Every structure is written in structure tokens, then in C-alpha cells.
Image 1 (cartoon, rainbow, N blue to C red):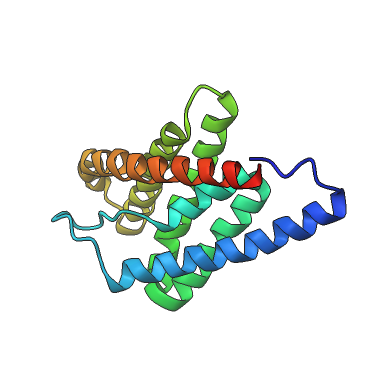
Image 2: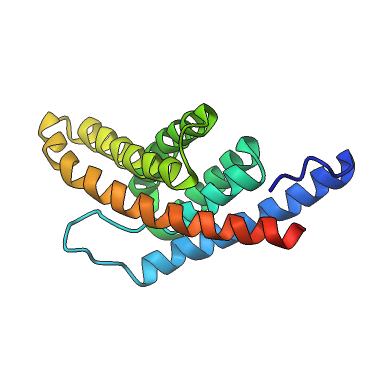
Length: 174
């Protein structure tokens, strides 16, 4: 679904309103993950349901709006729920995953689910890079295979949900 057929002023206003709603929804999802942690038996692994909002924004509103929503989510959730170090880990993951998702999407070779899987894996890579830097120990990368698997699984789940929601949004616009 694209909003590009609307008049320019209406489009900006509509996208701004959607961005505010999506940023609020991403914060709610972040809070839900803090309240009800999905314990997969592996430390640091989580579903990342707030990333669902970023994927939808990327496809529905475009990269600039999705990037802004992602940054708002990371900083506000960091201030409210995880503190400085949590914010650093999340920011590194968010920036790396967003760049990877944007490039993957631009190729046109991947579905929404494929783009989401790429984002999940690169989010975990960003976090491992920060952890390696902070601890100054390359042995942190021994944990990366586990995080690749979790990134693929969570990315697939989020991607499938995003695909279904985007289909509904496209159907609602008709």
C-alpha cells in the first residue's frame, strides 16, 4: 500500500499521524516485552515484536518515516525500560538491522518475511558487536550462531505477521 496518490499536503499530514500512532504502538510492544518476557531458555533472545511496527512502517510509509519511528522507539524505550546500556545495545541492533532491511528491500529479491529475517539477524549482529566492544573480548562471537538462529526464527514470525497486516492495510484502502 502506498500513500503516494494523495495530494502532497494530505500525504505529509497523514504520514505524520500514522508515524505517531506507529511509534506509540512500538513503545507499547516494547513495554509488553518488558512485562511479559518471552523466555526461550537462551539469554538475550526475544521475539522483538516492536520490530513488527518498523517493518510495517518501512513498507507502508517509506524508509524515512520507518527510520524515525525506529529511533523514537529505541530512545524512549531505552529511557523508560532498559537504561543506558540497554539503549546502546538496542540502538546498535536497530541501526544495523534497519540498514540491512533497507538494502534487502531495495533489491526487490526478497519478500517482507525475507527482509524481516535479514533484520532479525543483523539486529543480533549489532548487539554482539556492542557487547564485544564493551567487554573487549572477541569470544562474545561464540554466542553469535545461537543469535543467528533466533534472528531467523523471530524475523520469520515478525515477517509473516507484517505480511498479513500489510495485506489487510492494502485491502482496507480499496
